[in-house]
Each structure stands twice: as C-alpha cells, then as structure tokens.
Amino acid sequence: MNEHHVQRVHQLQLYCRHRVNHQLIGPYRSVFRGQGLEFDEVRVYQPGDDVRAIDWNVTARQGEVHIKQFHEERQLNLIFVVDNSPSFAWSSQGKDRLHVAAELCGLLGSAALDSNDRIGLLRFSEGMDDYIPPTRGLSQLMRCLSAILEPPRPVTSSSIVEAIEHLNRLKLQRSIVVVLSDFFFDGFIEELAVLNRHHDVLAIAIDDPREKQFTGGGLACLKDVEGGERQWLDMSSQMVRDMFSDQIAERLRQRHQQFSHWGLDLISHGIEDDPVESLLSYFLGRQQRIAGDIGGSITV
Image (cartoon, rainbow, N blue to C red):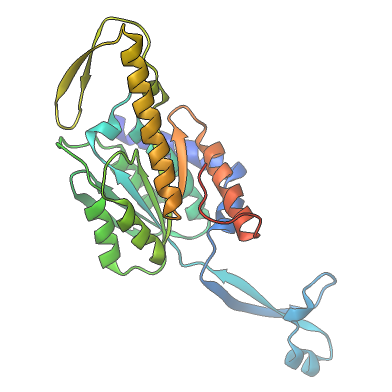
C-alpha cells in the first residue's frame, strides 16, 4: 500500500469524522435501533421520569421511590456491499463513483463507531471479490475504506447475486446491509428482497449526472469499460442525443420502480450531491415511517 493511498484514506476518515459529529449520529441511532434493552441500574426517582419504570420492590424496601434504568442493547452489524467493477470506478469528471461510495461508507461507518456497532465489507464485480467480517474499532473502518478505494481489477461484467448469496449463507444476526452500486445489471432484485427479509437493507445508487447530458457535436466513441466494446455515434444529431437521454431516463425510471415494487429502500445519489444531505433525507423518511406517517419503501 503506497503512501498516497494511506494519506487518501486518512483524509477521508477525518472528513467523515468531522461531518458525522455535527449531524448524523442521532438520526443513525434512531433509525437503526438495537435488538432490545438491557438492565443498567436502579436509582432514585426524579420528576419527569417514566412512572412505568418504577421498581416497586426496591421502593418498598427503601421507603423511597426508585426506578429501573436500561440501556439499548445494540450489537448491530453494519455491512457495506460495494460494486468493485471498472464501470463503477469510471467518471466523466474528477470524482468517481468509487470515491463517493467511500465517502458514504465513511460517514455511516463513523456513526456506527460512535454507536459501538460492528463494521464489515463485501466487494463484488463478476462475483464476490473479498469479504471483511464485521468487527468494531477505528482500525476496522480504516481497513474497509482502504479496500473500497483500491483500484478495481479488470472484469468483463458485474453481478451482485453471488455477493448476496454469500451474505445469506453466513447466517449473520440481523444486520444493516448497505449496498452501493449503479444497479445497472439484471437478475438481482429478487435476491436482494430475500436478503431484506433477514436484514435491514439500504441500496444507494450512485449516478453521474453528466451521463444524462450529451452536448456538442461530431463523432463520439462510447466504450464499455468492462467488456471493451466500442460504438461510434454522431452526437451532432439532436435525434441521437435525445435517444440516449431518453434511454438513460427510462433506465432510471425502471430502477426506481423495481425497488419500490419489491419494498426496498433506495437512495439515488449524484456524485456531486452532498452525502450528508442524502443520508439525512433518507433518515427523515425512515423516522416518518417508524412514526406511522408514511408506509412502504423509501426512495430519495
């Protein structure tokens, strides 16, 4: 691992640590709750305490009202499932999807650290590339971020199915599973829905908005960064530009409809969007669903 890579990971972790401290920890904990409550201690009742927590046995013995205190038993796993294909690392401008994915994972991972949750990572391309089992600690978060930022290996296609099947086989306790990709491949949504029965699944689709824009004229070469196929198109034709814009808009519409149909939460995040704002919008939707104000899956 070269010095530049280490510095890049360290800077990313510091950036995420700063932003999480101010905004994300509370919403993260309120949305991703633990498995139950554990008894902590008994103390003297104070005005404003919940009377349902009164310990009547201790109160009778002491002659003074006492209440039971509990703390949340979290024991949660936060597992990132990250697209490691060359197409996901490609960008039309400076920041690529892979770096944006690392930012989002760093923010959620930093909130998980403050909540004493475990963090793990699974990367996929043609199949499952590697798996880092969930454990606690800053060094674990740094290890995951470092792996996410590694250059992807050359592949000819990408598929998330093997990665999802691997998670299902692990028989982990209920976990938060955050899947980051562009989701422009087929045959995965039913497997993801199965995973969502046992875990709390959140999909984050990272998009490059410039892929929707075709400006300028002349011939343009479109290359499949995974398969290598090339196609030359006359982009001076308004009809050709409109055709491609319509195709991409239809793919995005179908993706949104697909996740909604299967009851899966989806964040659509552009590479220039503020990652904190995207996460906060999602957390707000989840809080409203918990409160009973809205139903179904959440797409933001």
